[in-house]
Length: 489
Image 1: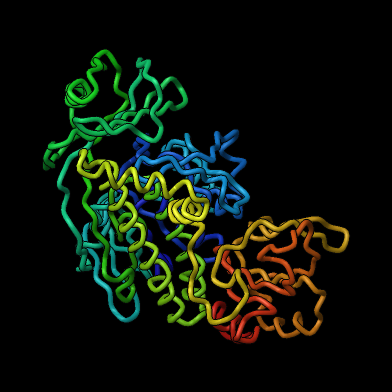
Image 2: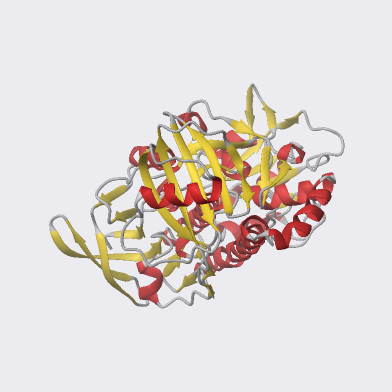
């Protein structure tokens, strides 16, 4: 084998997956057809859950001072995200180019074999592995790996070549996205619906203005290259009446509202993550964030399987957990598109929803949906409120040390958090200490009524989700440990 895993694509999902695999001890090669990063920034900012994910890997300091906000929207209707129970606000102005640069820096430090300028031509899989034909700067070669993961975007070669079903709806309109210098426009961060369409304006570092334009009635086109800036300027004039033709475009792109999701995230030794598995209207900045979280869910599981620590059946939980998340993503972005991009015929619906958002419970529901904090995986029955949910930040005091649940996840390992100094519990986990860290500590600052109140122990998976809790889980600890980390050694 040339590698246990070959990852195709070095966007945010591919880089995050390659890093997670390497962090968990798997040998990985990442292939990217582009010789260098594009510098384009389709994604902008992080949702609250992605902020938590990056914090759990110790990555947030790499981004420096991040502008954060509790203000968000659902289909262009303002939503106050401060109602969420989260340690972080959302980050609003981190360009995808910066995200890719920081993830590539991390990948390099971990020692991932990242090969730019390498295009996958074909592949075949069998019972023992995958043969991959790759064309690179030195010609064509064949690599062999245990698994191949497609993180190669919405037009994924891996998805097409492997024959994944990709049902959904085609684009019915075309929209423009442009980063432009030399414009002095009033920000419209959540967008504005006008008689001729919708426009959005955001300010980025370096004097760059982010523009999004949807001109109603603009049919989708098959493009082989980026649209000219003049198309954006002309459309902007028609919709807003403003002349932006004097602006200096940094880059321009066109996109549509196609909505598709593969029926299965894994077919044997071929796996998909990120935009390769789901495409949708980029409403609320959820696409890149969902893709990163796909990678974090998959990485530790795939590493455990290729290292022989867990059975292949663990990979089945990647599809069972992330496919419903992707399906819900498509549902909410379609709903936002109808609210945001339709004409005056949906104004009554906007007005009713605006009234409903005034109720805190509705705001919390919509904010949780867009932020990723509502996710709950099936980890087995039980009454504990955190079962299957992401582990919130918890300050901890151990013997002569202060730490936190967030810091304990930096290594990408599972954590058994013993909050009651239970020697019997620690002894029962002894057979898994090569895969998990057992930490005895007292919680600090847990408010009465908190979901953490009364917890005696928590088993936190490497992706930051609670896989078992006491009291409250119907399964016992060894059963949960074997489910998520394989048989005891």
